[in-house]
Length: 412
Image 1: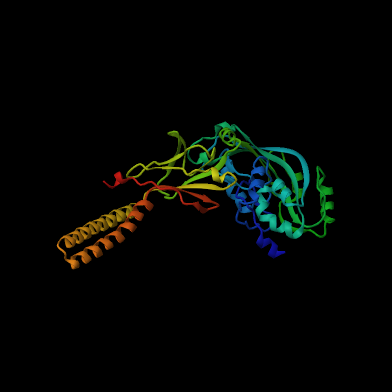
Image 2: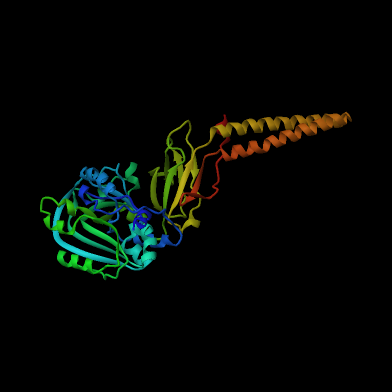
């Protein structure tokens, strides 16, 4: 069993709450690298359901977010198969504990489609275990919720780090859970604690992958506070931000814009209007024209965002802006200037040798001109390649060479 535990992992780094006692006895599942290809459609479909289960998050992530959630509302970036808290995005409001009637549910997963539908945030990490065991079961016991008061999705700022957010965490149900593989337990809901324990004993062929809390502890929660043994995050309730709902229209493409130089942020603009500041993520119409412009530096630089229409079926598109490489630019000017000078001198020598009928001078001129032309080629290449440009990356790898700008005025 230890080999299974080491090979699996949570796929996401999001919320969890109030939970030093909820880590349970499970070993954190180790995340697999996200893939695009065939799974992109499943992730896009999962993004339409804004109440994802978060049972697979680790105890360390829960503890690290406890203080942040106490500080106010939490905005997140939710893309279907991943959810990331924007910790530096400050949103007003506070989370209030609300005790609810105990409810228990067992969610059975027997296919890849069911895995991405019912447990999308853990789909990539659990896909291999599902294929091996044939089925997964998530058993939960919920004792209450943390509900956000004093803030709405409209209160999330549209600038700075908050520009990356897509949703506001409006609530988080907490309790206890067990994640098993194998077995033949059928899904069910709203069963009692005693019945839950009896059902668990019948599944002798199951393998425990992860658990947090204790089902019996959920009966000890009060109206003032949850019991520590029943405070593991179970399900997140998300509200899409107004701008995200508008941007996420039919035919749009989700694009992340970043800078190739950490010290030089860029502005994304459309029709000379500010859209967002890098790094930021937006749903865009791929047929529209966008520009990236530097905010600081010795001079302003503007590059065109490449045509994104060819990436319409892709789920992870990044456009990275690079400023001009001044060293390469100056090197290109020097190489081109010297090469051009040698080529000119060689041509003049060859001409003079031809007029005076001196073959030696003609040969020397030809050699000099040839050396000059050889130097001009790399000089021109340095000039062109050193210009500011934007490149498109798919899943972190360059997709295609993007056109680069060359502004000769900058040399003077």
